[in-house]
Length: 238
Ligand SMILES: Nc1ncnc2c1ncn2[C@@H]1O[C@H](COP(=O)(O)OP(=O)(O)OP(=O)(O)O)[C@@H](O)[C@H]1O
Ligand SMILES: [Mg+2]
Image 1 (cartoon, rainbow, N blue to C red):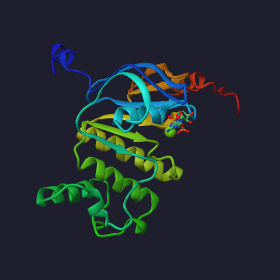
Image 2 (cartoon, rainbow, N blue to C red):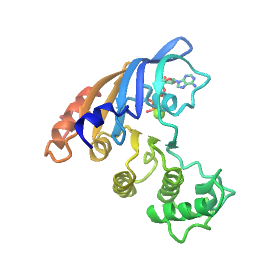
Image 3 (tube, rainbow, N blue to C red):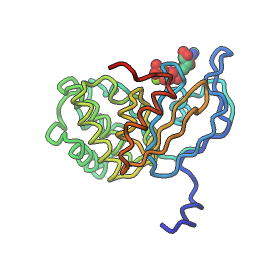
């Protein structure tokens, strides 16, 4: 894409002076943020800093919440949470297809399951899948909707370390193939650096650090130190 056309393209997500508060307590305090189409963004911050609040706002899932500001997001948005939220009384393929009808959708559902490595498990019940497999099914459910924006709230938080590493590779691969914009909430600095092209740190209701990750650079250690410093963590424990 020529540079000038790229500049004319509207960002996928645009937040202007976004505020959210609960019981008179401000959680998001005038957030300005543009996420260009196709960018992979990770959002870090302490517990209670407002990460999920921001994600729910972008997802349009916070109608009862007090707040102001402007928010633009694409029409096709998928959300993945820490638990897979599969319906236990529906088989895996039916969960992936939830709300979609027809042969074409079923074909796409089967393809999405194959993409996440669950070919052959279409007729399994959710409780027959491991935690990692359930999260993969949740990813397939989001993929089948061909989202322009994928929102993920600590999607790998409940998985063991080894499964998490495999899920990182899978998510990055799916992103490279489908190129949605991604906003991934995590509390894991290394996960953010491994996956994202840009890492934000939410601090006192604002974006305290906005770090572009050069994936070719050998600067992982430096990114890590800067992000940990922004989170108020010192690294002299050996
Ligand atoms: N529906 C709600 N009603 C009242 N307070 C809320 C509500 N949702 C969030 N909060 C408060 O807003 C603050 C931010 O919550 P949020 O869930 O966004 O944090 P978080 O950064 O996602 O934390 P964690 O890392 O623990 O998931 C917290 O103090 C929380 O108690
Ligand atoms: Mg949260």
